[in-house]
Image (tube, rainbow, N blue to C red; front, side):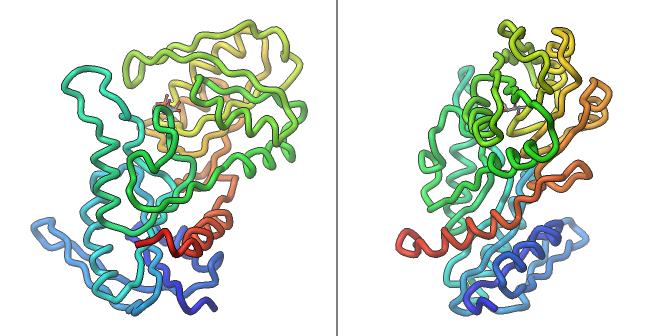
Length: 303
Ligand code: R5P
């Protein structure tokens, strides 16, 4: 058993935390929390971590309600003696507002990054939405490690899809779609997306003649409303392609998005387990464990 690492979790992260305890061969610590009648939160650490590295598992999708508990839990870990507090959030929120599209808009990615950087000592996540930022270091001041889902997605495709063509819905997807395609030994296509509202997505399609005998596999980093995928499915099937397999790394699935995606003609929907969902088939927890160990070993970079 690793005597220097103890894993803690925010409520709702029990499955992921148990997986990481196994992957890290670490012990599990307890922090209790409950709500006062007025809606405020009571927090008390129960298992100390004197001079240990505390790994706090807190998946921050739908982040707003999780931020105050996160601040309180990180503080509890300091009180319990943690040498360093490392946050594991497989989904890193507030990465998409990375520019002012219109005057007056707040670049929430910067504010959120500052808040997390002031709260924990290091961060491990999976494929954050890096579009206009080239790395997390542009906005995060703490050391971070990004685990990529591409190798696990490619392995799944190799095992389950005959003659695939990997399809990315927009230019920023090229970074992961090209890697998945290379590792799966498949060709790839990248389409062009114009978004005019949260649920208004138009996909522009290049000539699609080349790969009609292949099975299209749509790969995106986030599926939220699923409109990006739904629109892409329409173009592909309209151009005579088979019903596509849809793969998402982070499936936020707002509202009825999952059902709508099924009804839009996805042959199969397969997702990584960065956010728990019945469609999770690609397990990234062992890889996350490796990322945590690698980051902790880079001790000199940590505060
Ligand atoms: C943004 O560009 C991302 O890569 C995804 O394409 C986007 O977040 C998907 O969102 P939705 O499912 O709401 O279309």
